[in-house]
Image (tube, rainbow, N blue to C red; front, top):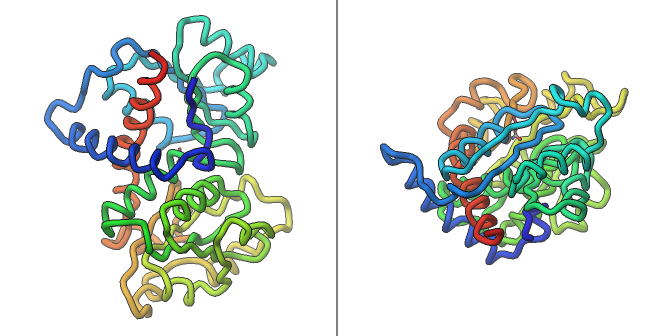
Length: 303
Ligand code: CP
């Protein structure tokens, strides 16, 4: 069985095929009839052990647009709360003849664990601070759509790199496609091994923005912070927050990505988040086509 566990396990050819397929599905979902019958005989379970708005709705819509049967499971309202294990939970769902599982979990490696231990196709919708492959693919797809190509583009990932599965998956995806990548954030939120992944660190936000074509701005993940780990929110906003005055002072125009949800007034001001330079809602729109492509390509290997 094939899975999507992380960008690390894909090739450039895999990414190109996903983008080509997503372009087709983007055209489909902009037609008056948005649905295709491709996955009429496929049943998919979305199991979410962590909160989600975009990823969960986007996967569910992608599956419905492909005519799959869909069940969505939230751990918070399930028998997980009575102590049922992850494997028991998933094996019971699979006993109802489910073909594919989309899972978000707070533990890094949870998707790999499932892939090794159950008989179903697994898609990782985010595993702790490890990977969020569909987010990175929709981010690159959005950059490609706006700037023509990812190859050769200068991209800075700003903020809380340490806790970010979005940062890690983006670094794998962007470097594989030939982008030049920097990270920028407080020293306490940049892991020591980051340069071994083929990126450089720029501690000064103004310099990073003056260098880049694209700034992918991350959410400050307060829920994953340890106490006293981090500059105060006020210091963060002063040193790493993007505001319109800062963007106006740059030598060039750049585009802004953010995976959502936004802490408005922290990593981005409302003015920047809602400006024409922001591709945030394009990312969300493209997420459905990207997820349709991934599900379609994986489903072709299970039937
Ligand atoms: N970008 C993203 O993963 O958002 P959600 O947590 O709302 O799914």
